[in-house]
Image (cartoon, rainbow over all chains, first blue to last red):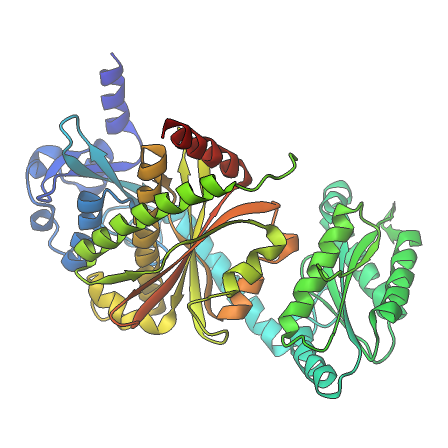
Length: 315
Length: 215
């Protein structure tokens, strides 16, 4: 009984299923494939897949199938790199804007009771997803191009990450060359996702803007500050050791803790966690300063949030 | 969260033996498939806390810190034995020509083609290695998800720092295995990083202890 159910599922499921033996002959060709290829199972049964579809890239596909037969490896293709393996009709004969079905394929090694390996290729129709994602990609490319042209984060008007990292390289070099004190301060709004969920994203944006302004206000003119990530900010404090930075950090933290952010008819409160790292002679790499500030920030979160931690070198 | 307990000496010894045998077979399998002699390093195996992953990876790295590399990730899991994790395969981008020929690609001119080559190569390296390990220790094979690109054409050191930033990792410990692959006198080289989840640290320990007590 289960056998019949298995058969029905393989035939009726909205995924293409084809099974090949090690000679590349087709042993199974399900209804999905019949519908989308216009070729029936009886026309292909026992035939070599390269004879039926001469357009298939033989060397590459043979290689993939060899890894399945010889090594029992899984293999995959994605529409993102290769729009399709088989030239099939997609599921929008009237409104579709592309010629062929976009496909994701999974190659599965299947063994029968006698230990013989077959390759099962499962073909998923990704046409809809592909069209949406391509539109999204175009928008992202435009956004990225814009960001490259400016140094500022569009939402908060603070510097963007790219610019601050450029400055970090410079300031680190200076600190190292002249052996000057230099600190990095990383800040992250606590429970920001909850703020977005509770008050809505436009309110969340206003929180980001206000927090950014407060941080900016508490820093000195020689400090460089920017938006590092979604709810993350970074500040570079030249000529400042970690004791001095701790004082600034606590000032920022307290101001944000006591701030009341008004948005439409709502009043929102929030806190931030902070992590401080500082230049020591022997440090050769500005990445390490970021990593250490990040670890200190992580410890602030773990320690209960709404606090500042200075990076502690493990002994 | 349970307090963490490292593997003891016997468990590490057995785990190293398991990987050595698995990788020996992997070398043979890759050579048969790709028709080229494969050089594999002795696997580096350690349970590592999240904040130490970066330094562990960068120590004894196949690449110079400024070399442009691409990182491909792929999930593996063995539902029967509850072992899961991800592999991260790192490639030097100048290995294009070597890889293309081996995998049956024709003249690869566009970036989608390059990407697909690296995905295919990572899939083979990762699949063969993890299946080998799984058969040796757990007695059956792994299941895999499609590989995807983590980072493309980025300076090696920056890439590692980006991927393993402590505050982005939602776990505290991992079982980290590092293996270096090279063929054609280093025309192609790759670092395979295997990271198993915290849950898996315990289930692997159980399998190791079972084999140890059977000896």
